[in-house]
Amino acid sequence: MKSGQEGFYDFKLTMEEESRASKLHEENINIDLLFQGPLSPLAIPAAVSDRIKALCEPYREDPMLYSSLPGQWVTKLAASGEIPEYQSEWVQSGITAGNRQLNLRDTASMITSMGEVQLQFDSADWLVKTLKADDIRAAKREGRKAGIISAQETDALGTNLAQLDDLHHFGLRML
Image (cartoon, rainbow, N blue to C red; front, side, top):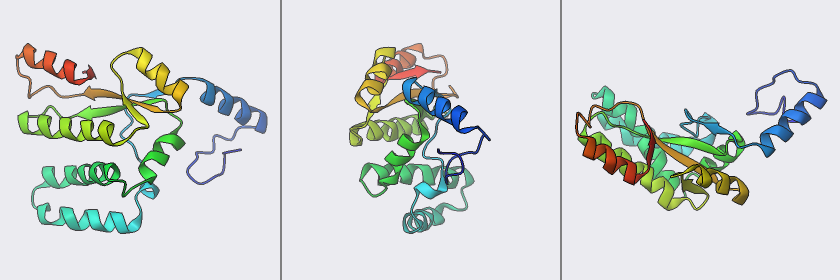
């Protein structure tokens, strides 16, 4: 089975246990609310990785910006079709739905991350924005993946609950 294959963790299951686990995984809806995907360095071809490093290098003296840029470039390059491995990592992960995270640290990061998240939905016909549980079930039936928009910090919102309504209209479902 999959145990021992590159990219798969060996849980030391018997063939029967592995078969049962694979069947359950295939039949169930699997949601990872911490999925940042793709996670494997193997998902980014070496030439693309080198290009991203070169694009980020001028910002090395700004640690916060420098650390956020690779993810932004991966999103942009995957959306343009330059990283087809991006989709295969989602498929190989076995999840039905994973989070697509907004950064609500400040207004600028909120707007930037909203654009990045929306770009993912607009450019990938295999990824649907989850607005309700039925969207996840439909994605499973259709062989697609569902993205659940989430955020952890709330600094950009302050006490402006109208802005929270706006983010809900955008698709934010987990805060």
